[in-house]
Image (cartoon, rainbow, N blue to C red; front, side, top):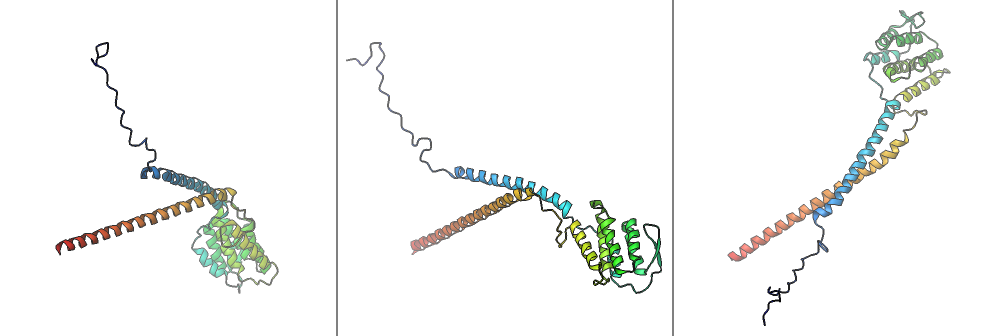
Length: 269
């Protein structure tokens, strides 16, 4: 019988089934290194972004707080240190050097006191005249009160006057040093002078009236610090793992070299 169909065309052979794919689009296949590296890289990027963003917010807030409440004392003229040395010495003689006070009154100071006033003129003229009036006082309590008034009442709190405030504190504190602390008012004036200096600048002394840092410093700073610690830990773990792989590879190479030498020795023998 003919194998042709009624139309005259040869009968088509049944198609053979196509070969089945070796694997169905990766089902059951173990993820490669690139696939494993993707989530890890995204986690690291998220931690870095979190650390930088929160750290920037906390850093800006902390810098603003420090600029207002924890300013470092500015540099003062070198003569201030010399003036401090002379002012710490007790006054044993009457003054002979004329100086004018803020009110225009002429007072007479000792050579050491006159040197301190001349140094104060290099910082601020009004400071020098206030200092001249305070040093002209010989009664200890009155002298201490006038020295305290210079820092407390006659120097603005604006940071633009920090240099004047620092110089005034250094010379006033030195002038209070030889005063007898048992006299009423001297010890209290010295304590208030130290307290006012500590509240104006960032010193080792604690200022009871200084406000705490703003909450944003802690709200943003603590998570930023934790994120940074996480990054450090991840880096250390990755470094340790890489070092372990390097040691294992080195041991395998050493073992292979020993086996090759043993095989060559066996063939030669």
